[in-house]
Amino acid sequence: MLLQNIIHCGNAFDLFKKVEDESVVLIVCDSPYGVTKNDWDRILSIQDFNLDLIRCFTPKLKDGGALYLFGKPDCLDFIDYRPFLNLRSRIVCYQPSRLAQGRLNYTNNYDVIHYFIKGKRPKSYNLDAIHVAQLVKIEHRRRCENVPSVRHGQYSRTKFNEDGKNPGDVWGDIKQLTYQSKELVSREALNTIQKPEKLIERIILASSDPGDLVLDPFAGVGTCPVVCKRHGRNFIAFEMKAEFVSIAEERLASLDTGQQILGFSYGT
Image 1 (cartoon, rainbow, N blue to C red):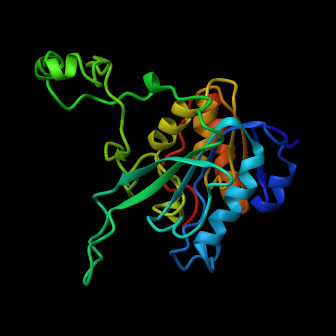
Image 2: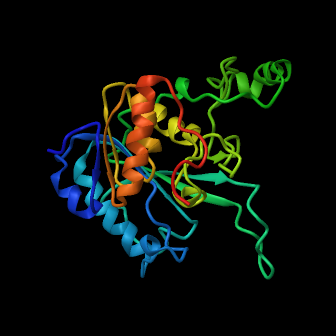
């Protein structure tokens, strides 16, 4: 069993073998997308690559454990993942500030996060921890609840919650990172590697509980481990690039001192 709460420098497919079976509650997989010219992103078939990942992940998850697999809209096309995990949702991560690069087609303004579970029922789904603001006025919603077809129909248990609503499967409320983001620690990580902490936080709060073990097989600059540590989750993380491991370790250490790693101190 690999040591917990540290970032292991190495190849994920080699390190998977050292993770104990049925020990992980949540896997947050921001793996290569196969769409850039970066060496680490050159993949012959992203579909075959992701199916190999799913095969590796399945025995490591506890029953009811969750996998959140990041990618482009076609990253699971024409592969059969059903013998391994159950796909619960395709979450659209809307990024409207992307440059309008399309000249002969519509610009791609979203990525997809595929939410899988092992088995039929999630081990954890903490909706109260991830509520977002209601988009309708309370008075209007309460009037709707009093309509007879709602009050006595199949949606009779759907009530207005003053703490907020379910975030749904289109996430447009989390601002993507830019060169001006205080959270960004490396220009090299922008858009391809570093995700917003709020995005990872929503996943971790929803699909794990304090003390659970979270696996991050492509840790990059350590956002998932940082969020895990902040919220009392244990983690095992892998990253091939030693420079990124150093950045991630400093981010983790900064939580103990109360200092935030800002700006472009690292990378190019």
